[in-house]
Length: 423
Image 1: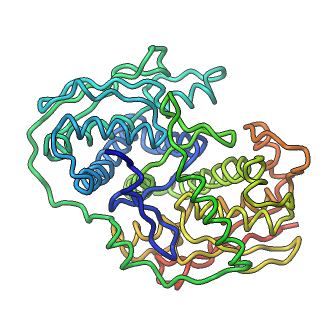
Image 2: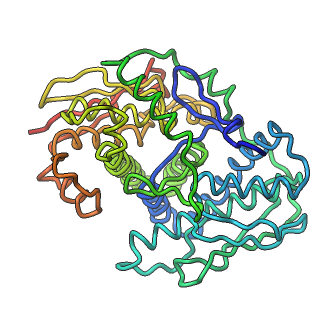
Image 3: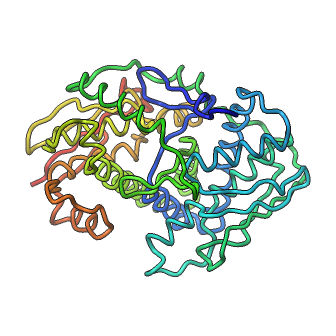
């Protein structure tokens, strides 16, 4: 395939991005690792690995099937080769799928995003006792199923070697089993998402935000994995994943807890918001503080409103949805809105009408944007390290509290988060 980017498209007016017909978005390693740990802690490592593997297998199968069809790629070898190319372009590392066949086989991974970045972030301070690459395993299973026209549920995968366990590479053993096909899950794709999103609208300084978004999308369109298959930029490692992968593991974790451990639901939901706050702080902060961002925006202004508008621009460029600022009172409050975040369409399609707001990433990241504009001295060119995060968001240093006041999944006409100063 000459140019994989030919299958990338956007949903006009909503800033959702698709590979083929599958919604995707980009996240940093801080978010990826924190989400994984949240689910590990809530469900136990075994159940967590299975859920994350199943979600990756489901939605990468959808993505690869769609891309192969659009590209006219038919033979198993061509499909496996293109799948490995997509894996690296998406920042997940290098994966060798050439030893796979219709009976299974072995996939070899080098510089796997989750294992590599876990070692980068925690390797000097923490010991790990289980593999890190459930998403890569699910991808390999999806690639094998697509290559040989198998049901994705028929492909099992186990990571038998992993960098975080002291191995020199990551190894995935794949096998085929007979399955009785169950009722297929509702597909979450371009057409269904276009049907359920509310009407779009503009926010404060919309022309500026839209102009910067166009520039950011053009910049990001040329970003892909390096010689390691990793995307390292703005102080973070970035991957592109099906957004439905994040949604499935988050919402199914909460559903399991509601059935089995209802007292844990509030804690795990708060951790999903914390993941969003980590994402907003590290990704928005790293980009806004970079020379590339200064060149794109043509400005060094970093007051709170400007930082919030820039955060909305970045969210749009990463496929999070059409975020905007709807209201602002200096030193008191700032309100963010979107017709829908990427969390909303999935919830509507798979789960229906919600009783409570469902946009955990949106809520946490909006609080991060407020604190980035309030507490960060950009003239010092800060490094967005874990220690800096802990300092900025220490209870005594963070006066902001976010609340999602509207949610499209509850029947509202938009999603809205209001961040207010509590002191």
